[in-house]
Length: 121
Image (cartoon, rainbow, N blue to C red):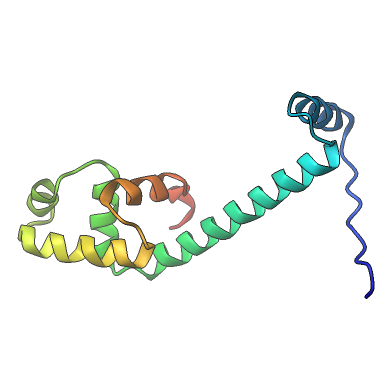
């Protein structure tokens, strides 16, 4: 079995010192902490990319409902704002939740807040 070569990252001095201090505080090696932080960052990036794709796949009405949900509107408020029935809002919310694999409107709000919606068009 061939050993994989690691990536040699050249960090600036300030970042290196901060990494070393954080590792010491956690009683870890700087290398171990760097690995953990990079792994977590890459996972978050993948989740963000997936969420952006899902957001782009929403119908215009689903997107409106999602953004009003993000603003904390109730189904009744969304219905009034979009001049549609609350049952139609419930259907749109259900579709949006399914597409984002979210369990609730609160979960959806958390996922949407992580996105910079100004960059998604």
